Amino acid sequence: MKTRIFARARNRAGDAISIKAAKLSVRATMLLALVLSMGISRPFAHEGHDHGAPPATLNVPATPRAEATSEALELVAVAHGDELTIFLDRFESNEPVIDASIELESPAGRLDAKPGTDGTYRAVAAWLARPGRYDVIATVKKDGAEDVLPFTVDIPAPGSMPARQNSAAHRAGFHWDNLLLGLGIFAAGAIAGLIFARRRRAVHLLIAAATAILCANNLLAHEGADHSHDTPAASSTGGRTNAQILSDGSVFVPKSSQRILAIRTVKAEAGTHRRSIELPGRVIPDPNASGYVQTAVGGRLSPPDGGFPRLGTRVKKGDVLAYVTAPLQAIDVSTMRQQQGDLEQQISIVERRLVRYEALAPSGAVSRSQLEDARLELEGLKARRASLDKVRQEPEALVAPVDGIVAEGSAVAGQIAQTNAVVFHIIDPARLWIEALSYESLPPLQAATARLGQKELRLEFRGAGFADRNQSIPIHFAIDGDASGIRAGQFVTVFAETPEEQSGIALPRSSIVRSASGQDSVYEHVSPERFEQRRVRVEPLDGQRVLIAEGLEPGRRIVVQGAELIEHIR
Image 1 (tube, rainbow, N blue to C red):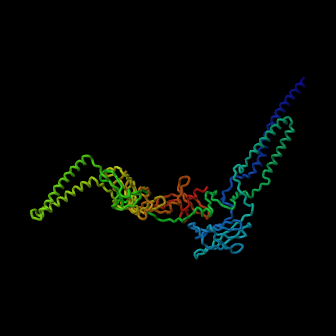
Image 2 (image 1 turned 30 degrees about the vertical axis):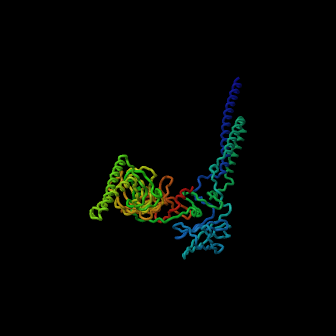
Image 3 (image 1 turned 60 degrees about the vertical axis):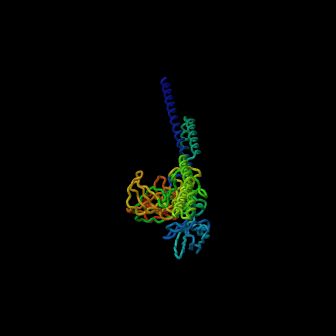
């Protein structure tokens, strides 16, 4: 009995141990299946060869290029097959030099670069078609001056510059098929663990096979992967180069694009300049060369011979521009008729008296003086009657007060013009002023300029108001020089110089661009085909220039034409 009891207990213990071992075997098998799936996915993930972030490099195009600079000139050579294209510019202004003579000392001997129709120079050299490094010396002759510019052309071997993979998924090495393969292996391992849970030897064999496969996969993960050239290669653009932003933040603009964009530079120089203040203003007519045409009395407008003058018509002082016929009321008409009747009666009486005097004068019955008095009285009465008729019939003539053009006018035939109404405004376009407004008292002004769009106007100070106008002080300037294209009423920005002086670099306003952060900046020409953005602090100087107070050192080449176009390169 005891033996049976012990046998049953031993069998139950063995079953418990077997169940526990089976559970452990299942867990171990599932764990190894998970690790196996991860290990197998690793070599697939390595196909993208992701080794972290690449070092910062300038991803300029792969077209073979060479640069050379001197104090006066700047040269860029671009190789296309067996042809060498040379761009020659002035170093300081970036202005193309198109009528120079260029001789090249090359490995094949002397070559002459012939000018092309597009402002470049071209030379054919067969050695450009072979890979290697070639030293070239360019001798440039221009206007009796000679300059030597050495450079090196590096022709890469075919296939030595693979294109950089730009796909984010490829760099990360993540593929959906790898994920599905790993999940399948995990499921197969789990099923195998459940089937062979009671067969420890099979489990051990499975564990050993999985370990062997995992090790093999880890060993083969880097098999055939050569990391000796894991540097980002430049991308080729099919023999052409495009403007682009480089990885260091600078802007690459090939010389061909610089010619199209007309990029121009100047050398920044520090100096002392008078401090300027910026004032709002508008164009007004010169009060001594303009005038209004108004009616003294209200009446009906009528055109002169030829009609009303059109806007912009040039007129002279004294020209009749319109007529005003004053309306007569009923009481005025009756009074004038009564006066006219009295004058007619007096004229009749004096005429009869004059006839009698003329008949008696020869006999001496009437003196000569009486005869003359009668004649003068008759003439006076007739003159009074004529003036009365003139008042009733002749309109008032509106004449031009000054020479100029008709700037404003709204006359219409039959229109009733009120007393003192402005019918025409005459302005001399060659004599214009500018009225600026200042909200604080100003020191004595030395000189002033005005900026109207892209046009700069020289101004002469005429005077400042002593009384405020809407809490501002009006200041008058006369435009000195050509005022063509300027109209009265246009708004301008006035830059008035003060006696105070300040130091800085003066640059044209066209060199200032507004960055994405809203800060002013300029572009420095750091190399023949590279430009870097410099943030600066700007103060007004005059209508065409600004003062760089901070952020720029003297001697740098700054873009003054085409900066806005460089800013839009992406």
